[in-house]
Length: 106
Image 1 (cartoon, rainbow, N blue to C red):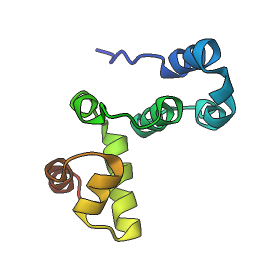
Image 2: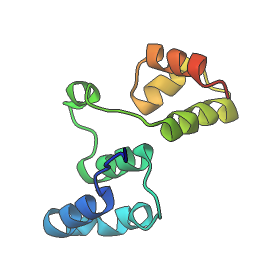
Image 3: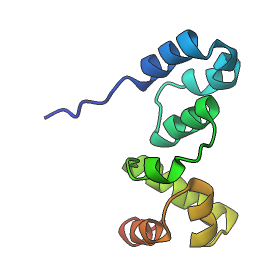
Image 4: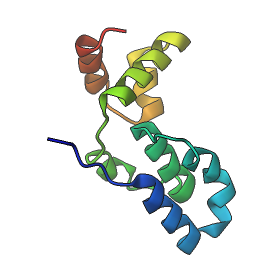
């Protein structure tokens, strides 16, 4: 059975054109990618809406696919960062990061 994925490119393009046309230049580089990863969607969200006080409550609803997890783990290894540093940077829990490291050894 095929996994249905929302067309984030279309959703974000429409939203930017209708509500935030001044932010189109900042987001255009990400929107032109062939495939948008989970991290690209998060970056777009931050470029459009910025960091808000509600970040904690919104964090519960984030999900990462395997490619995003591997990208985060490679970033950690490349930059020789601790779990706490990576968790703070990507706004996720250290426990999630530790679990991912056990599941996906880089």
